[in-house]
Structures are given as C-alpha cells and as structure tokens.
Image (cartoon, rainbow, N blue to C red):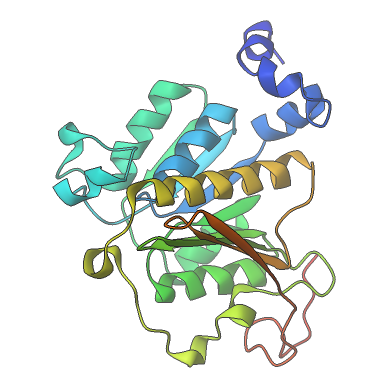
Length: 254
C-alpha cells in the first residue's frame, strides 16, 4: 500500500481485526450492487469510501424528486439522470481510486450471471421480489455471498445468504419463489427516510466484513428493525431441503 493509502484508510488499519492485510484485501476486491436507490445509496457510498477496489452499480431508473427524501447519493441536480450514473459521480468524488462501473440497466439472465460471477460479494438493494429472486439464483449458481436488505414503512430487514457455509440457507429458503409475495413498494406504502440508511449501512458493513475476512456474518440470521419503536429482533434461519433453488439438488457451492 502507498503512503497516501495508509493515511487515508488509517482508521481501518488501526483496528487489530483489519490492519494492513484486511485493507489490502478490500482494495483488491470486487462488488456488485443491484439498485442505487434508498438502500443502494448508503451501501455504495460506504463501500467506495472504505476503499473497495471495484464496484459495479446497476439501476435502470432515473432520479425522481420523490427519491431525494431518502436516497442520499442523489441531489436536485441529479433529477432526471440515471441513478447508477448519479451515484457513481458521488462515489468518485469521495474516492477517485475506486473503479466504478455504472450500469443503466435492469439485470437479468446471462448478463446478471456474468456480473455476479465477476464479483466477490453481491449486495441486493433492489425493491422488488422478482429481482431479489433472480439475484439469489445467480448467487447460488456461482457460489457468491449475497447481502440482502429491504425496507418499507418503518420496518427493515437485513441478512447474508452465503452457501459456502455448510447448511446455510439462500434467499428462497426464507421467501420461496412460488409463495407469490405481495409487493410492498415505497411509492405505495411510504418509507421512513433514515430507515433505508440504517439497513443500507448494515449491508455495507456485512459486505466489508466478508471481503476483509473479519468477524461473523449474518449468514443464517435475519435481523429485523422497527424504527418506529427502536426495536431489533433476530431470527435464526436454516436451509430448506425442499428449496427449489439451493435445496433440490443438495448443492453446496464452493
């Protein structure tokens, strides 16, 4: 690491659990963030600021005035601009050495699989179940850890789905694809602005720990946060042997 990098990331390096080796691993790492809205904004900014080497950030939507109440990567000058491009500009301003690839597209199919395979960790910051399940399938297929978050009204949740650990569940073990979940979108139900910051920051923290190889992840655990009453709950998760994504074949990606 160069002297300026040692200074820039000194507050990480001072932590015994991270040190120079952990920060060096982060500088060499690659992440894929799906969604540059309420959750993706804080997650992307923290990953870039922390010194992640490469970040692909995908979002097909444009910034709308209603987004600015909570999506902190964007500002008034960004209204009408693609969200991935807007967030990338802010990320580069924070850390010009982070290689950021803004993708103004909805990821699916082979394209999604290609990007997941090229990442060391995937953050699902999307706002719909179709995308979440598609990202989960790609992560299971390519053996990549998935950091998942969601937030609506005053309720948020975050977990890690990492099938590299024996018995760990995937997202579909918790929310089966065939269950037909009702969509809860911010545009219809509203969302408390700081809630997405809390969940997005938690996603960034989990991704950084995975990339640096420190601490214990949320794999096998789901954290639920109610911002209205300042309450946290933890639910233990197990792999579903009948899961259509990770259980049917008994696959254990390595």
